[in-house]
Each structure stands twice: as C-alpha cells, then as structure tokens.
Length: 83
Image 1: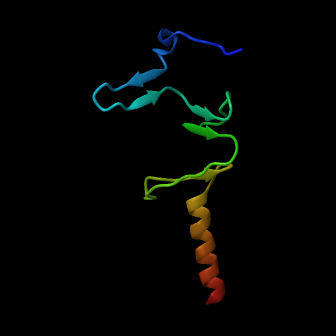
Image 2 (image 1 turned 180 degrees about the vertical axis):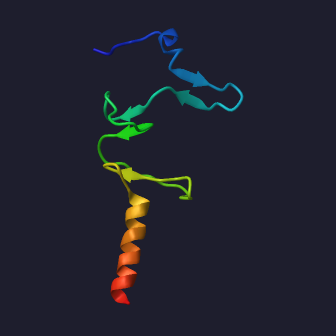
C-alpha cells in the first residue's frame, strides 16, 4: 500500500521557483533507493546513463572514484607506455 503524504509535509524539503520552474530538494535524492548513502547530492543504486556536455564543473563518480580523472590518468599512462 502506498504511503500518501500531504504536500504541506514536504514544504521544508522542496523549494519551487515559480518563475523558472526549477525544483530544489534538501539533502540528497535517491534513485532506486529510499536510503541515499554517502555525502552525494544524487545517489543512484543500479545502472545509470548520463548524457550532456562535460566540462570542468561536471564530474561523474562511480563508487566514489571520478570517471573523468580515471580516464585522463589511463590516457596519460597509455601515452607514456607507447612512448
């Protein structure tokens, strides 16, 4: 059975900007889990697909390890190995 809640019960957790439609949620958000772990704004349990532009302000972590840093370190190691 679903646990229904009144919207007023979420007022301290959810902030909606009426002008832009942006929604802010306090603490962290869990996807496929009701108990987000660690100190992450977004915690995904399971497989995720991330698309979009990657820049210096964007990072993706898998099990706490930066995918971007790992890829860059692997590329440097490969370049050194190939001479």
